[in-house]
Every structure is written in structure tokens, then in C-alpha cells.
Image 1 (tube, protein in one colour):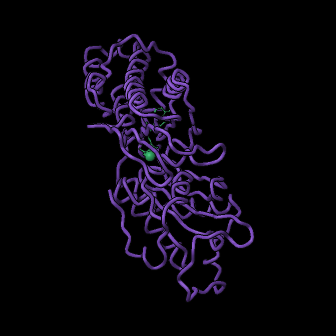
Image 2 (cartoon, protein in one colour):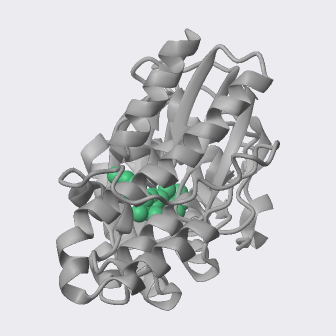
Image 3 (cartoon, protein in one colour):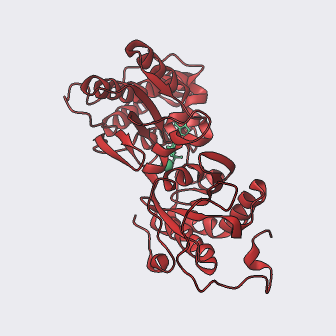
Length: 357
Ligand code: KG4
Ligand code: ZN
């Protein structure tokens, strides 16, 4: 155990509760410990401003796989078991003592209520005894802020497509501390469409990577799926019709035929999901005066989406920022990254904080 408060007698709370998230001593560093538990990954990270010192992710995917999706109660229980070892691992890997951290950060919303509460309670429990400041972070702001991390941090303004298991949106990012929602899904999220599609195809959970894997052997033009909302003039997305079309397609095939065509169906379905994301991104770019584009959220790890986004940027002569896959899916480094630009709450202001689903 590396955290100082566990060494008996070595620590006393300071009477002074007005600690700033200023620059650490003579080193000029600002160290953050961030927690992220909004869905099914238990995550903790230590960052030194925009530099990641550790980014520990304990995925619960295998625990949820047999249910074909995230079960909220299972997620909360796993977070409870995993959060302390994950925090310890993040501090150990960064070779940082909890006492040396300048501020803590935690995802407070949106997500699964029970899952979020584990992170919020843990962060309060770590911050309060040491009178550390705490910063509450919006999970989606975290996905945007993954692009502010080293190496080659992206500076606003840029247009950011966020596509995850719970959200799909086009975010106009004009400064570090906020983003404007220009379009969002009116029903399912892109990742949710992939997860549900994978379940219909018997491909397991999480569905996005499973579909991506099998789609490599399939023909994306073999089946025609609707690329919805493309005739709608706005920037909103819709994926529920696509999911229904997939259901009908699978129903029309007998088991042997479904087995034979699974890769073609997966490739065509993935192409339709990505097609809609790209159509709206392109429309968003046409409507604004953006010079740079970024992706975020788990679906941003998808290679077809990355390739097609790169092609759009090349056509339009725009800079493209693509963070590595582990910074697209849920992680705590992105939460620390967003926290750098937000107002910290001082002890004891955050003691009554709760989460918001
Ligand atoms: O951002 P994230 O890790 O969690 C949420 O905030 O929801 O996103 C998870 C979603 C899941 O729906 C998963 O199937 C999808 O991201 N995903 C992918 C890929 N990796 C994860 N979708 C497509 N291709 C991938 N490589
Ligand atoms: Zn996410």
C-alpha cells in the first residue's frame, strides 16, 4: 500500500482547508489522481498536467458478457471490489504518493447511478482526510478532453464526434472547459447499436470490437442497411431503425445461411453505423468553420470510422487528431485531462456531493 494515510500515525489533517490546486512546490508540476466508474470499467489514472503517468483500466467486460450487456448491479459490485486496488495500482505505477497529488478528480455524471456513486464516494474518501481539492467531471467532457493529452495535444477550436455505448453527439469545442452539443442521437447510441447488433448476430459483448473483428472477412456491400437521418437536414443521429432492419435480416435467414453470411452482415451493418456517423460529421463540418476534427468514445477505436474520418479530413484539408484506442474507450486519464480546466471544490464543499445518472 503506497498511500500515506494508511501508514499509521504518519499523517494529521491540516487545520488549513484552503489548499489550492496550484503548482506543486519547486517542481512546477500539477499532479492529478482521477477516478472513472461510470459504466463497466473501473479506472484510475495519475497525470502530470497533460502527461499521463499511469492509466489503469480494469475491464468488467467478461463479467457482463454472459448477459450480452452491462448489468448495473453487477457493475456496481465489481467497482466496489476493484476500485481500491485500481487506485493503488495507478499511484504505484506513477510512483506517486497520494499525499503528493495536487487534486483529485472523479466522474460525477452521466452514467449508471450505482457505478458512479462508487467512484464519487471513493474520491471523497481519498480527498477529504488529506484536505485535497476535488473536481467533478462530466464523462462526455472527459471523452472530449482525451484530445488535450500529450503527445501532441489538440487545441480548440475543433469539431469532436463522440460515439460511445451510451451517447452519440457532435460537440463543437471552442475552449478547454466546455463543449456545445450541435447534434445528438434521438434514440440509441452508435455503440449501443453495435452492442445490440452483435447480440443479434451471436457475437458477444462488447459488440463493437466483435463486429469489427468479423467484419474484416465480410463484404460491406453484401447487405443494404438504411443509413438513417441522412435526408433529415439536422445534425441529429438515429440508430434504432438500423437495429430493427438487422433484426428482420437475421429473421429471414435460416441458421445455416446466417452462419454462412454472418461476416457479410456484420460488415454491412458496421458500414451503415459508420456511414451515418461520417455523414453527420461531414455535414457538421460543412455548416461550421472548423479547422480540426477529433473523435472520442469507445466507437472511436473502430478502424473503419478512423479511416473514413481521415478521408473526410484529407478532402477538406483539416487537421485530424486520433487518440489511441485505450484513450477512446472509458479511462480515467481523460477525466484528469478535463479536470485541469475546471474549478476545483475545496474541502469540505464536496462532502455532500452525489452522482447524477
Ligand atoms: O466510451 P465507452 O468505453 O463507454 C461508454 O461511455 O459507453 O464506449 C463503449 C462502446 C461499446 O458500445 C463498445 O461496443 C464500443 O464502444 N466499442 C467499439 C470498439 N471498441 C469499443 N465500437 C466499434 N469498434 C471498436 N473497436
Ligand atoms: Zn464513455
